[in-house]
Length: 327
Ligand SMILES: NC(=O)c1ccc[n+]([C@@H]2O[C@H](COP(=O)([O-])OP(=O)(O)OC[C@H]3O[C@@H](n4cnc5c(N)ncnc54)[C@H](OP(=O)(O)O)[C@@H]3O)[C@@H](O)[C@H]2O)c1
Image (cartoon, rainbow, N blue to C red):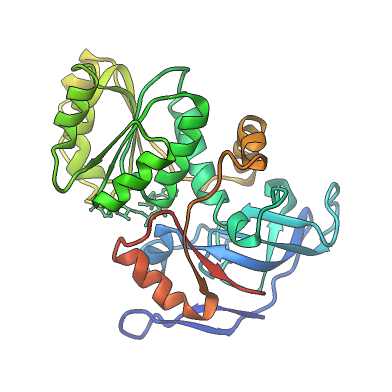
């Protein structure tokens, strides 16, 4: 089959559409003909050799896909050849075919294209697990989402809007903050031209927020802790500004704060299955009715993966960048 291969010995690690071994559906797995996959920030790091796949996972880039089941492995029930599916992957999405544990499959929601379905699993399951499971978000609690216009941010805003939780976001351009407001953010702050901590405090009458979903890391740690209410939770899912920072432990004790770190990719299939099931139980009707939709920034043919990566590296995307694999 064809897949995107990283030319790791060349400058800039160019991506080429070349030949790769055919995947095989093992017991409990299905083989899927991929129609579309989507970019995640982690792909840029993996490409540069800084985020190796977990043990046993495909070396090929790509943490999600949508396509059609072409074969069933031993012991798979509940799915048929020809079913339209999408799923999280630990790797292998930038390819014509992939094998996936049947337990993590989701159907393509009725009326959705493969491009839409490929843009959904990673960012919606990330937003869901971190807000609703890790942080244990309660009814009416307020949330600050950094990177509001990112793939994860645009998913988080919609889930929070649907759940009725007020959501405040930060983003780096006025175009991005405007899109976040359209998606349902109550307040969207351009952190490059405004002091986000002061704006949140003013907006909340000095109270701060209950939960923060953060991908910025070191540069925001002190402000994030100051912005949390008593019993607030900070969930860290990335360290875009750096990973080392000082923490004043008195903030944590005095206000009984919790700092939670989380990754999705390295979790075992059993955990990913539970996350998928809880997500579907709570939000699937809103996806099927179109209330919640992945925000698609752009669609590139897979042969133009270099250009797609460049767009993400320059922080130009609002929502997801999709790669089309088949017509
Ligand atoms: N732990 C997990 O389970 C998990 C799962 C999925 C994703 N993630 C992480 O979540 C983040 C979002 O993923 P994504 O695929 O949605 O990314 P994305 O669409 O590429 O968005 C990331 C955005 O972060 C902002 N940003 C970049 N560098 C920054 C910096 N130094 N300081 C502040 N903001 C910065 C940029 O927007 P602005 O223009 O607004 O600055 C950028 O567009 C990534 O860091 C990713 O690695 C974690």
